[in-house]
Image (tube, rainbow, N blue to C red; front, side):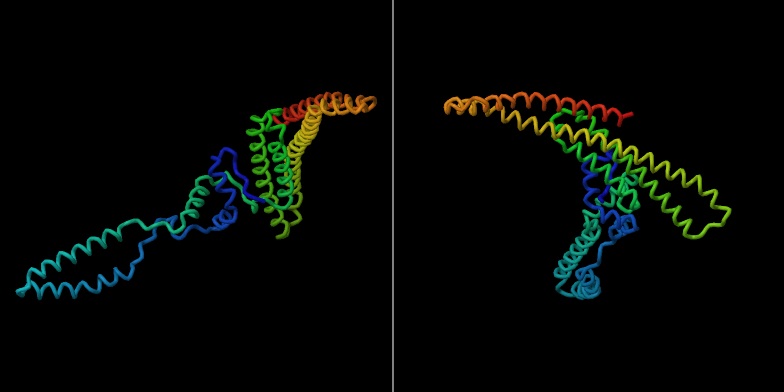
Length: 297
């Protein structure tokens, strides 16, 4: 499973986090871009710096000889050139080093800034992953449906409420997973007989919490089922309407061939089928609206 992100996180950042699940897992384990998090990276001393340092005593000795000789002007030129080179090198060494890992640095900074507002696969145990997968499939079925895109449902409400429901379910499942993990580790270490009765209320609390989360997921699934029914009626209605537009051509052909009779009556039934499907679509959409209101309560 991928990264689950709080819907209040900006879309651009959420997208960055979702496509970098493995990098986020490494960061969670303590990895960070090379020394970038503490700002202690120092510019490396290259061959030119070493050569410059080695040549300094030689240049100074040569300038002293030249300044004491008839070639003093050449000594001043050499001194000025050397000073210029040294200043240029100092300036280049004081420039901030170029970040060698700009993408990883960006992910690292955003992950730290939005810490606690995204969840990774390792935050969920196997049971929680299965429940979260059900919730995500239900949300996806609604948001990807044509009836939602066409505005037959509360598309604006879906766009806000369903991602919020998914995040809340994921957040609760992550907490439930952590408590179950601690509970299992405690049992694996071995319990004194006196401790077992104390654990029973905690186990009931875990079971009740899991049941409550599953109930929320089931409500999402019921809503998605209503939307699927509306989706089927929507597509069937669209196909019937397309056939209705072709009906005059069929009637014309039957009339010209003298084969109208019963065939014409069967074609006219098409209009009745379209009306039936339209009523079915309206009923399906109304049922989806009712299910949506149950989700809000």
